[in-house]
Each structure stands twice: as C-alpha cells, then as structure tokens.
Image 1 (cartoon, helix red, strand yellow):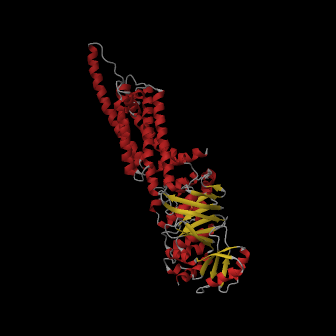
Image 2 (cartoon, each protein chain N blue to C red):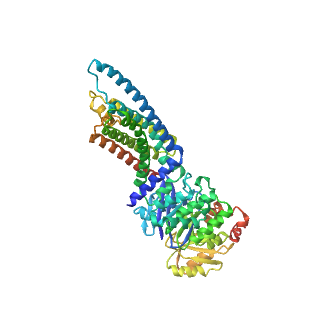
Image 3 (cartoon, each protein chain N blue to C red):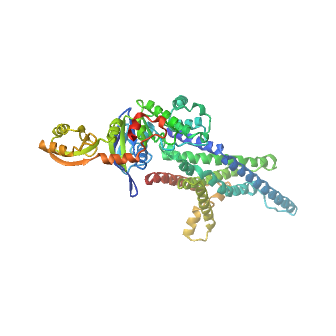
Length: 263
Length: 324
C-alpha cells in the first residue's frame, strides 16, 4: 500500500516535469504529426495498389489486400523507428537531472526504496509513451469510419501492445543510462546509440547463420516485433520484451546502489 | 537519540571521516563545527542513510542507519548544504510531493504543509515557482521540507550558508525554536553561530573529533587558557584532587568514555603549570605517563574557522571577544 503510494507520487512528479516543460508537448506533437503523416502516405499507396488490383480483377485473380497488414501494420512498424528517436528524449533527464540538481539526495533520504524510485520514474515515462500511442491510434478510426470492409481490431491491439512493450524496453535502457551520468545530453546520445545497436542486432537474423549469430539476432529488439505486428500474440515475444525491461530496471537499480557505495 | 560510534568513511585512499564517536540527547541542539572539508557533510550523509559508512555504527532513535534505513529515514528531516528543490515546481506542489514520499497520510497532509509553511514563513510565496525564489526563500523551503513530517531528528548541513545577515538571524531563531521538540544536529564553520544556537559543540577536523564541549567553555579555551593533556596511571580520584590543588589550574576534566583517556587540565593564560602538575602527580605516588599541551591543536583549527560574522551590527558580544 505504502509502496503503491510512493510509486504513484513519483509518477505524478514525473508527469509534472514532462507537462511543466515543453518536453511532453514536443514529444506528443512530433509523434502524432509523424503518425498522421505515415498514415496518410501509406494509405495513399494502399489506394493506388487497390486501384491497380481492381483493374486486374477484370482479368480475374487479384491478390487480396488487407488494411490491417498493408496500412496499420506498416504504420506501426514505422512508428517503432520513430520511438527509437523519441524515447531517449523522454528518459535522458530521469536520473541525470536529479543528480545535477542534487535532488537525488532528497529522494534517497526519504523513506522510500531505490526500487520504488526507479519504478516511479519508469512508469512515469512509460505512461507518457502510452498516451502518445493512444493519440496516434486515433488516426485509424478513419479506417473504421470510411472503409467498406473495416479492418480487424485484434491486429491493431497486438500492434499497439508491441509498440508499448518495445517502448518499455527503450525506456528501461534509457533509465539505466541516465543513472550513469549527470549530463542529459550524454545520457540521451548514449541511449540512442545503445538502442540503435540493439535494433540492428535483428538484421543478423538469418536461418542459415551459425548458433552464436542466431543468439545475437535473438537479442535484437526488432526480431520479436514482426509477429506481434501481424496480430500473432505469441507468449515468447511478450516474455522477451518483459524480461528485457525487467533486466534494464535491475541494471538501473544496481547502478544507483553501487554509486552510493562508491561515492 | 543519536549514537555514533567509531564511524569511518574512506573514499578510495582518502579518509574523510576517521573513527568519530559522539552522542546527541533527545531535544538537544548539537553544533557540528569544523573547517571546510573536515568531514561534516560526510558524517551527516551517513546519518541520513545517503552514504554507507566504511566502518563503525550509527544509530538514530535506536535504529541502525545501515540495518534499518527506512525506519531511520522516517524519523529524520534533512537539508543538505544546497537545499534539494525542483525549480519547475511551485512551493505548495513541492511540499505536497515531499509529504507524499515522506509517508504523511492524505488526511494530515494539508495541515502539516500549512504548519511547515507558517513556521518557515514561506506563506507569501506558496504559489511561486521555486526557480524564481531568492536564496533565502529557497533555504526556508528546504527547511519546511525537512520539518514537514515532524521528524524526531533534524540534520541541517550549513543551514545559514549564503544567506544575508537578516535571514541568518531569522533562520537561527527558527532553529532555536525547533529545539526541545526535535533533536537537532547543525553543522557550520562559523564559530559564533554555534554559541547562539547550540547547547553543545563537537569540533571535528580532518575527520576526527578534536573537542566536545559547551560553546562557553570552548570560547573560554580559545581566549588563551592553556589546556594540558595529563595522562595518569593509578587511582583517578587521587589524581584529580592532586591536579586541582596545583596553583594556577582553573579546571580539571577527568577522562571521559570517549577521547584520549587523559585528564584535561585548564590553566590560566600565561601560566606554565607543567612542572607543578608533574610534581603534584608524582608526589601522590602516581605514574605520570604523558603530559602534552592540548590547546595548540584546537587553536590551529579555530584559525580555519570563521570567527566573525559578515556584518558587525549582527555580531553578538561573545563573538567580538573572540576576535579581540
């Protein structure tokens, strides 16, 4: 009960920082703008394809076009890349700023545990990211409104979940990196580099590769995204993202504690 | 209320705090005096569970700072040297956040905030962003944060640093008013400050306790009275009466449980009583094991302390005596 109150107090504080500064507005604006832009562009392309296939239909046998796969899945895939750029900006100040301001001393001498501080900060950033996803999903309402065959909702839900889980991993990594420095720019740049590295590990995914390469590819954040984006809710992908996030938070906790000992 | 035993903190090869021991009783205001870099902040950070000690123990209200940090943190209000504040919050929001993480129940939060705001006189800036406040107000908001949960123990690291003379006086009066209800440790490098606020003073230098006394006695010693450390083997009672009998000796303090285990003999300024002290001890058939002039080291430390106030009008008579 106490733990819950402490964590929620920290989440509220982080939201105050996000919305008391331009960070939240810039992040939300950029995100929704890009979401909308991708949606429009990809949807136009889809219209072009469907027009062509309609012409082909006269000669019989055209490929079946799915709004889910060709529009929604595609947009969400693109937004995952955008998340790679935006989440370091949400996480870079989480610990670096507290350290620079000296307010970490306030938190560390209050009757709350280190894990509660980390969870509060993590959930604060993650809930803002969830809000960004929700705002972006509003774009798809247009499809339900105007499409003659409305898309299925399930792949949209799993796609949004995939994006949220991916964001949780990004935020956990960013939180950890932010504990390492008192400089926000350093934290942000380092996080972005690290995330990009984890991202491209997925490019090594190749069925013919050796076992070591496959292990590295498995650790790639991208590798586990595609099935969820297609609407396949596979437990192993969810377990991967959740355990990756937990590991990141664990590292952040160890980092904060060990700095106390070395300080 | 606070028991510190043999506390040591090393940063790599540098020893910041070197085996210090002291006690603070309930309701007492203890001054923690020492030049910059003496280890005051490190000791306070250990007491507030911010840093772990390398060796030794510290107990606050009966709870060990290492074993039961949450219990200690619940009972301690702390202001670091620069008050930790969020510049993008207003005073009210900041105190509300502090009340939440300090575990004050929702029903009492408003009353506690009102009380702290009133005690620290920050009522007129309740809705102002902390980033826009002057140094004096920030210090007071920091103090309001520290007393918010009505903690049994207050640990204040240089609470008057960087304030103007008027604010310094106000802050000291505020701290004095908090004594009695709260047990307070207050660190400073300004000598007159302790004489005005504290009942007892611990002087530390280079990580070690070099003196522990009431402010008045310390001032007295500083004025030139020579202090001898006399180490005697044998019956301590006989030794004490022998020492008191020596002409020119003003006071004799028997060896305490902490410290070097030697008598501290205070002689009148200018009088060299060393030969008489030696004769008196040996005359009673006791062994004189050591005889050193203790006053010197203390004086050297005082040289590094700030002995005057920045503005003359605010200097109390005691402080002027010191500089005279």
